[in-house]
Every structure is written in structure tokens, then in C-alpha cells.
Image 1 (cartoon, helix red, strand yellow):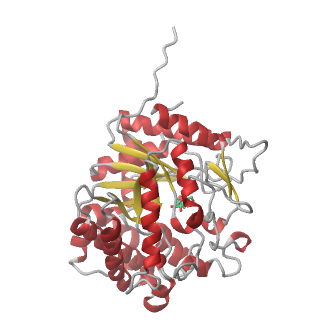
Image 2 (cartoon, rainbow, N blue to C red):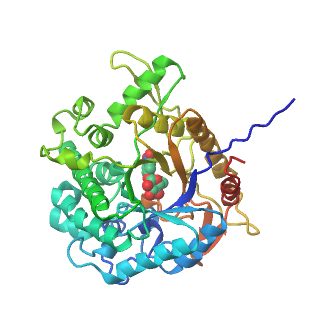
Length: 451
Ligand code: PNW
């Protein structure tokens, strides 16, 4: 006899969509906003596919009411959005731009009117260009010291309605990629030591922001950071490979998670970076390692690991035939979400894990008869959710899941070609069309189970 066991999530599980200001808002030079490093970077020939800029994007700055109504119609209860620092403080310091505050007041109010709980990321890569020009951006701790007052401004202005704060999104991407690999803004290629210094500045900025939420957040305020550690998947789920995967997880992600959770740069860090370690002051770690309420994880892909001598593990290269999304870095590895959540729970005993991003980037074709049949994305998400469900069943404290992304948007150096939305965006007309994946995800939320 067949007996179907529904893959139901816990009753208070939080479902939502995620997005980020620079990728959707547009209005890049409107109402007092000055350029971010991404506005500058996008204009350097050859850096972004087709020379796409963030100038207009999804024009969400003007269309947010319609967008939030659609989100609510799809049944979301939570929305992870980000705030543009150069809209609030055009040069990253000093006077606050009242029109910037106005916009986010309206945005937050519209979230609440639509039954959407806002989860606010304070920084999603759009550093004010003036801080890059005047301080050297994340190379210099003055940027972290400027982040403190910015975070305070946000918490004081919005904290009566915003209770979930995320300090930074993916330190790796705006430090290593921005200052080391040169693939993201500002596009620098610095030494290992300087890159490690940018990580350290980012960690300090996180610390100042946590302090701002603790001091001014008011009742019920919570704060965490969103990180994208590389998930290490044991090749087989045997004790030996699991131990190897844990060891690899600690070592390869040691630049961010060790100082946050252990309050120091540990052996794993020095083993990884050697003489190129960041310079720091003894007191820095008190700020950096203040306890937080949750850890946000962005999980897209993972690396397979098996036990091996002498270092205890071996990271396996993916064969050329391994399936990926059209975003070729995005190898399909659903177990990544299980193991990433489990590793941080087991290794760092984080009190709560929130999947702040998961999704898949494809070059979807435009709607045909009003439909986009993105079975590829639907099944990608479905497979990851099954592994997330398994993690919860195994006792990992996962509180919520935010799908990246609500609608197609500016995919950084891949411009507008690469689509991560479950809602299709026609950029010429700014018409939004929910794809098959959106309709499916909407049922998942409504039934609180994988359908
Ligand atoms: C995230 N990787 O970045 C960002 O937070 C989003 O802004 C972005 O649009 C989204 O993922 C899709 O790319 C990542 O190489 C970039 O593992 C690269 C990786 C992971 C996340």
C-alpha cells in the first residue's frame, strides 16, 4: 500500500522572497542619491555583460507598490530587502538625505500594509563611491567607522517597524571579489594582505551595526549577518567523510565565521592566510564577536569533500559534465543546503539559521501566451527544499527560507541577461509575469509543505 507522507514544514516557518536595492531600484541618480561603487564599476568597459548599468533596473523605486502587492498576492509573508547607503548618506558620511529616508519609510509602510514582514539588509554591496575615493573603501577602517553612524540612522528611523536586521550581505563578494579578483566593484586587484584587511574592515562594520541594533533597536529587535560560506558536502554520509567535510568547512570559511563565532583569528585562519593575515587591534574582536540572534546563509551550490591524508580532507573538483544552471558557477548540489545549515549548527552552535537566499540563474525566454514554464528553476528549488526539510527533521534550527529572487534583476557582472526571478521582468515595458516557479512556490507557502 502506498502511504504518502507530506513534506510539511514547522508551523512557524518563515517563507519569503529576497532582493537587494542596487539590483532592482534603479533611480540611481534621483532624489539626492550619489553613485555607489557599482554605478562607477558598471561604466568601466568590459566589466559587465553588454555594459548594463544599474540606472533603471526594475524601476522598483517607482513601482514598489505594485511589486509588493504582487508579492503579497503570491502569498509571501516576509520580504528581505536592502537599503542603499548612498541614498541615505550620498557620500557615506554626514548629513542624512531626507528623500532617502522618505523612500524607505514608504517602502516599509507598504510592506506592512501588504502583510509582509520586512527583513532589512543594511549593506548589499553598494558602497558610496565617495568612501572608495576618500578612504580607499573597505581597505580602511574609517569605512567601518562610517558604517556605525549609518546603521544607527537606519535603526533610529525605521526600528519602530523593522525588527529583523541583517548587517552585511556576503562579505566574500565585496572584499575578495571586489579587491582581490577584481570581478566585482570596485574592481581592484590588491595583494592577499590587503584583501584580508578588507575582510577585517567588513567584520568591524558588522560589529558597529550589531551595537546600533542593540542600543537603539527597541523591543523585539533582532540582528544577524548573511554569509555565503562554501558548503562542504561529505562525498558519502559516513563518519569519516562527515568529519572531513566539517574540517574543510572550518578551514576554507575561516576568514569570516571564526572571528564572528570564536572571537579571534584562529589556527584555521592563520593556516589558510599565513603571513598575509589582517592587522587588527586587540579590542576589535569584542566588537566583531558580539552575540547575534541568527545567521543568514545564502546557499546556491557546494563542494564535495572526502577524507584524505595528510590534511584530513580532499576537495573534489566537479567533472565537466556535472549539471549547472546557466550561471555556470551554480552547480546543482541540493545537499549543500542540508550540510551548510548543519555545519554551522554543529560547529558554531548558531541559535537560528535563516536561508536568506537560494535560487537559480537561467537565461529564460520571454513569456509565451503569458507563461514562462521554468521547470528547470522549479525543480532546482524543489530539490533544495527537500534537503532543507531533511535538515529540520534532523534537528537543525532553521527558521526560514527566502527565495532569490522575487523578480529578474541586475545580476551584477552578468547584467540583465541572467535571470534569477520567479517573476519574469520585461525591462522595456517593466511588465512582471509570474513564472511557473512563482505559482508553484506560492502553493508551497500556502500549504507549508513541498508540493
Ligand atoms: C548572491 N557563488 O551572490 C548575491 O547575494 C545576490 O545579490 C546575487 O544576485 C545572487 O547571489 C545570485 O548570484 C552570490 O559563486 C554570488 O557561490 C556568487 C556566489 C554565491 C552568491
